[in-house]
Length: 211
Image (cartoon, rainbow, N blue to C red):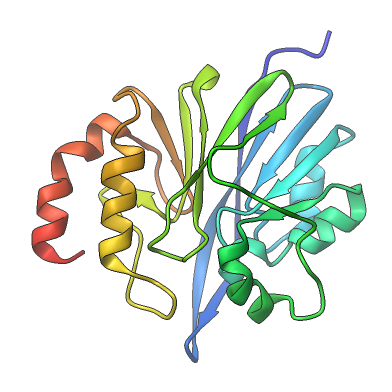
């Protein structure tokens, strides 16, 4: 038996660089699967740590919620070690090339497609704003959303840097994410987990603050 599908969580540390600045960051890496196969969502910073967490399971894909360098820094190494494809929305190619100019993603994520792992589906939701090709992954069987940097506990992802757009992220959250069941657990790219119900009442406040 492959065992129950589960969500595993790893925190890795490194830097995020864009627009001439560099910052220390901690990233959430999410692994979804069972005892036999898994996907990695955002292979950040430390390929060895990610590979150790995957273990001897078949890695079906390295999925990138977006291509800021802190989220994709370890993606090529994890993919090369396992044979898994790196999947990215093509609208984030410009950001990917800043991080990995000599290595292309292996496949494109498309809004509305469903990735399969261990018998469950991960629905791809294109949620531009923090980055033009930002996506979230919704797993209805697990009651879970993997939001990357689109939605955090307490607010939307940052939109003050290149290739970001505040109006777009608000539209993405309002139309795509807040339409999900309130009990959906939101597994974020940084920081604490939250829920759709916890964040939904604050949308008007975020708009008013421009944040």
